[in-house]
Length: 424
Ligand SMILES: [Zn+2]
Image (cartoon, rainbow, N blue to C red; front, side, top):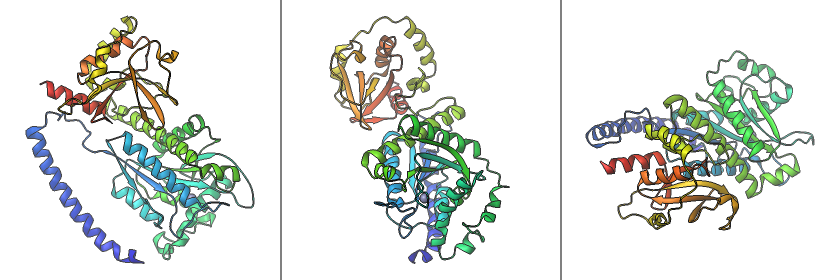
């Protein structure tokens, strides 16, 4: 019950943190004006914040299966999802509501998201049916009025975690998670994030279906307290049924939780990219290779370059392998970013004469997310790599430029900026 003492300290800390942050921000702006040639006046000062909420925890086990508890499955997938995002999206801040097996009150979860000024809230749960009923598949939920008793049942089960909180009656204003009447509040509720939430939910289902090969139980609405209190687009994922032995076994394998986390990750990337394009006209977010990518992908920030590049691509002939470039893979002395062209992705290493490589010599690969990602060319001269890319566009129309720094993949637009600024 140490948490009882927390609010005051917590508020103080928040207050000082805010002051401190404002101070840092002020210094940052001054320094930025003085020195930063990157300052393009873009609206990207704030990073994208995603809150990942592993449902249940501590003395609240969530649904209980024959061999496992929901809280642990949720946490496994939540941590894997967060790791994927942190690894691939340097511009995204990942905030977890929990990273361990601890109990977090429902309203505290939403509070964490609101305090973090999150752009997205993803709550991860595992479904269950009572009375030995079995069902299969994953579903994604957004806030709304349950249209069926089955939907209401899911919300009731997830909301009843508040019964683990001693003061739930006052904290949730008399809300009784097991009484249908309590759900009337969801009927008149206005949710301004509804369409974004539903869109993200449908992207998650699309990837559960296509990428993860899970049974698609669709997008639904119901009155989830945790989604109601979070002031941002929010979804609640039900990964599968812990009450169905086959699904429970799958949810307890490393492959199962990795696959599901990857599915949500891909939906997240698509959502983020679409939002950036809507807001800024371009996006730094690179989609996984199985999603068709527009030609402008990696060059969005270079503006005029992309148009001429596209034109040139149409006229280009057959690939002109440039052997000498392979040598440039080694890190340059001044830690300049190294640009490469990603041409394709494979789940296993390809033989040198694999027909997917279309005769291209001197290809290289790096491993990411369990995939072999094949690249061609390598240079710290972005323009050179851009020219090389044009020369192979006819063969690899989905090829795009990526960047590495100190052997690590980095945000390509930041790398292009660095390159451009060094040239000045
Ligand atoms: Zn749950």
